[in-house]
Image 1 (tube, rainbow, N blue to C red):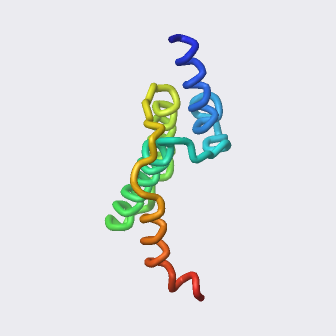
Image 2 (cartoon, rainbow, N blue to C red):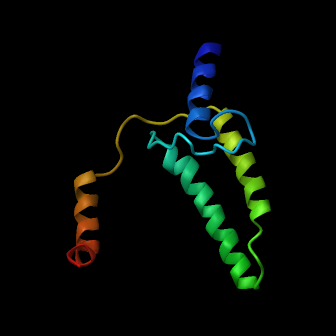
Length: 110
């Protein structure tokens, strides 16, 4: 169990923080690992967009330092806590692709 935890944590750190907490190589080994987008990238982008919108609406400057501090904590927690992901695909890739094609078809023709 200890060895399993070690290798899983190591894999997560390579995909996210690339080592120890607070380093500048975050996202260096960006991959499309199962669950990575929904549990790592989406929450980070969501927080960024929410904070940016709040700053714009308040007529204030975006607090990048506060966001980076939050991100560092979030990234480290994600990289070091065990998560479980299913290996089974969710949804219908062909149906989604057809919907996306229909939605963006006009942009493709330009």
